[in-house]
Length: 338
Image 1: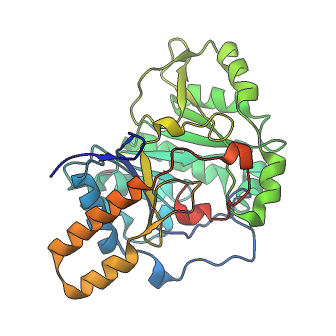
Image 2: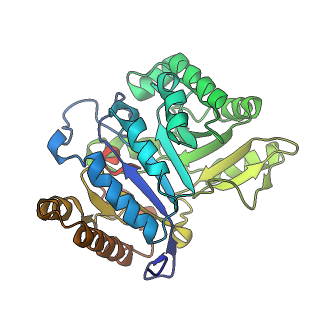
């Protein structure tokens, strides 16, 4: 089989983000409305046994990196067993997960044993009351305990994701950098991204362009650009002299990185989404469930491959969010996986 998924614009696709659930124990102010929203019915969420063949065929086509996302992936039962199955796919070079960390102290050891290599931890404040306000129900101490356990069991390099928001946590930049340096963590500042129109007003008011502070941070901490980094993603990474920590900036809106995008997404309801900010999707769930009734595994494999190739071919050259901002953006980040 010919290796490699190449899109219309010549980009090699090697990275699949997999949302295993839209459920979350948090209601973060930039992700979910506090009320008046509905989760996807359980029967419409892809089962693990439906996700597995998709990833197996994606790996055959050249995808080497998988990131498990949600919602919050640790609210779904059986995740460790699923990760164990994924680690048996020899083509996969990297298997990671994004989490809010609430359950991490409880599950870190089990996840590491199952085969998870590393985690990204979403952490938008180091102030307990502010953290609770942003998440609407989170416990900072519990998350920091989870971080400590994750480091202890070897889920590293551990990345801290900080969504910077104007008037919310933009006064904590130095605190986060000092925290990352003290724990030898990878820190990533991320621009707020538009999604559901129900919270669009909050996004507009709180959007904080990283370009306003990036150069000041680089100068203040004498940061040097890191040319290569394990788990390298959309961020530009920098490093202080003599430090193990790295500091990254993800400027999805003010200075997008579409020209080097190497990812597609599998949503929790079974659709391949080639671009986060495009509503174009390829429905895999319907086909998988129809073919499963026929019990023809070879036909199922071929159809999955064809649909993955189709999804990559409709991947747009780039998004227009900087120009249009919130226009036409009406999706739940928790369903897509961020």
